[in-house]
Amino acid sequence: MTAISINHVSIHAHDLETSAAFYEQLFGMERIPTPTFAFPVAWLRLGRQQLHLFVRSGAQPPQFHHVGLNVDDFDAVYWRAQAQRLRDDSAFFSGVYELPDGSVQMYLRDPAGNLIEVDWPDARTLDPRIREELIQLSATVRQTGDALSATLYLDRRDVASAS
Image 1 (cartoon, rainbow, N blue to C red):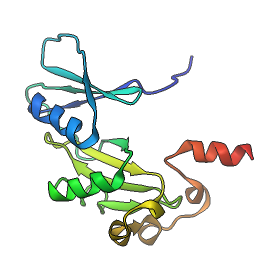
Image 2 (cartoon, rainbow, N blue to C red; image 1 turned 180 degrees about the vertical axis):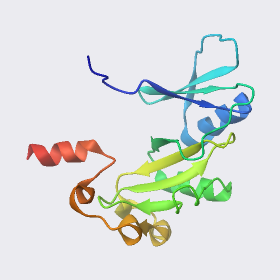
Image 3 (cartoon, one colour; image 1 turned 180 degrees about the horizontal axis):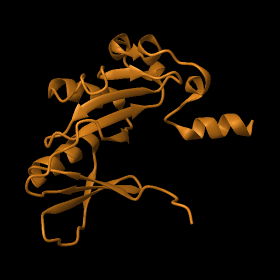
């Protein structure tokens, strides 16, 4: 038996409506019907997966565990995150990294303090002002061996290995 995909990720919200609106407005997620549970829950469509939000008394988000999201317009998310001061440049030492394969990671916090990683496949396609801010991961941590071919986008590796 093998797991075949991630169905959903479930994270805490302090205020369900505030958190749901955050994901709807910043990432264009869509609320979908949600069963009634013994505590407040909202389900959001994220492509073929789902993000589940829940409110539980006393729950706190972990400091470094995070959800990584692909977006269709990194520039727009970047500028909105800047304007709303959502970025967390301390979680992994920088708010915006370029990985060895040219992909990009930016970290921000949602209204409940959950860490969100926003991913983009190609730094070369970003607004030049954003590219100026990118920190090469290889400039902070030496990359050798398999690390040089690591990628967030497995379809790249699958295409490369098929040729």
